[in-house]
Image (cartoon, rainbow, N blue to C red; front, top):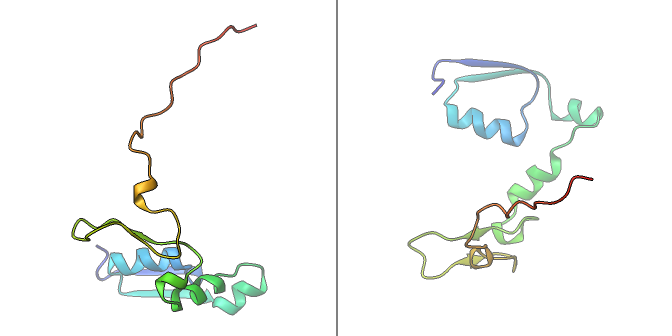
Length: 100
């Protein structure tokens, strides 16, 4: 935890960094460039902010739930559910062959 700490950054944090900041319980974030400033130079997270506003089943990424308390695995937007995940996650066998 970063309670009592402050972060100084050149630009307003992206959604991933904002999540880490929230989880860290940081007290304040100071930035010099806002979202419009960063968009003007080619960095835009607008699609993410727009996507976050949508109900989870309407977002651009399929979200799957395999919570232990759920009756069965659920998938939103018809994407692949957890039941399609391979059960054997070991790496494939190495090939042995002539060097040449």
